[in-house]
Amino acid sequence: MSPGQTLLEAQAQRLGRTGIPSLIAEDPERVRDFALRVGPLYANFARQRYDRAALDALFEIAASLDLAGAMRRLLDGDIVNSTEERAALHTALRGNASTSEIARAAREQALAARERMRQMVQGLRAPHVTDIVSVGIGGSDLGPRLMVDALATPGAAALGNARPRVHFISNVDGNAAQRVLAGLDPGRTAAVVISKTFSTQETLLNGSIVRQWLGDDSRLYAVSANAQRVGEFGIPAERTLPMWDWVGGRYSLWSAVGFPIALAIGMDRFDEMLAGAAAMDAHAAAAPLRQNLPVWHALTAVWNRNALHASSQAVLPYDERLKLLPNYLQQLVMESLGKSARLDGSAVDAATVPVWWGGAGTDAQHSFFQALHQGTQMVPADFVGVVQADHAHARNHEALLANLLAQTEALANGEASDDPHHRYPGNRPSSLLLLDALTPHSLGMLVAMYEHSVYLQSVLWGINAFDQFGVELGKQVATRLLPALRGECEADDAVTRELLREFKQQR
Image (cartoon, rainbow, N blue to C red; front, side, top):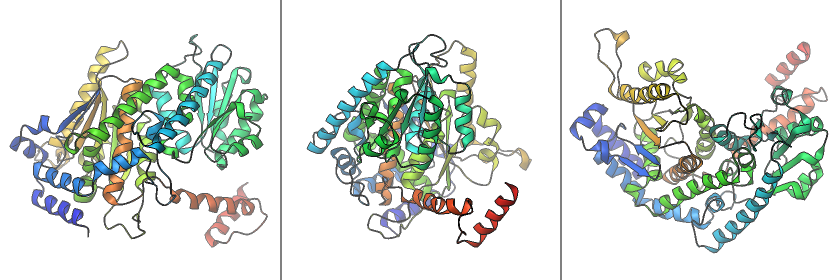
């Protein structure tokens, strides 16, 4: 067991079952001291199950592992993705976070690609093009889908706005493409196929469906790092935007992968989103550990996983526009941190990422909150709220914020009762993240904060946040099974052979 893990468990044993209400009563200043503000983003950790001594231990671990130096290495373009011998320079896509030669060169490439993207966005404006279909999966879909859903004006093109509506197809299930295309006019629709390698099975199959449906390749665009395969697919270089090996898929929404975002909200607002992320980069690089929001968030996550042994983590946005945030974070966090081998190949000696899941309040309160309040498992939660409303329904927004505050309070404090069925144990930890308003700038900051927290957690666990070899095995097996599914050969696995026989009987 590592010294850090031993230290965490000693602190957890010291605290025992000390309740969150007791921690606050014994240290009332924590309601302010356990909070940070970075521009339009406010975070409060007062309802986490640690005290100042436990926090001191966490920051001692952070200092011993040189989290500040780790952040600097990321920004400078060092080989932080050691298993693939690559840098991870997504920060260069959005700002000048480093003066290193590698980071500057990446920044120049990013700016050139952004200028080309700006020209393409200008050429795809309503009313000539009312709809855009974005075809991708994973990192080529989840980030753009989140940002478009959160920031685009609903029904923009239909309302005469200069921005087209953007639709997404990701699932290889043909129902996904059929449902999206059913309500669109191919004569007024353009499509963009997004794939880093341009070899992803789901994306190429869906791209072929969309290309055939369009009937006009002149409105088909691509974003990829593989220009040769894009050309073979039939999309010329002048309608192709680049990607690079130094940007991982789940960190790529800031690149040309964000083309659908720019189409939906415009380049000026896309630039604002990048500026918000760059502001968080600057904060993560310069703020001392104890005033550093990504550091504090990462340490809290490791505390809940390794000291309190939480096996899952909820993310609960109290804004309908952020309802896709849990989906996005599932990939960002679990694909990055779902590792059991350390950088040197040895086994990790502590649990790594919990299962991330969630849903939007207040809908989620009528779904799974029963288990959060009275279930046998303690589930830490990130609550995300927006203070200012962008609609005229003031009473609805008041009710939404009241529910947000009430849930964090009720989970922490609980309620005693002689009737066990009406007893709420409380002592359920949560963090509260508040945006002053939902803007491209503030949302860019929030997403970048999560990115940096994930990277810092990987440093604390000694794992690689930037590879994803676990994604590949199932894909490889599926490719091998296609001939067996078509009846061209037998499957090797006995259970699979029986299932294929069942398929054949029912088809």
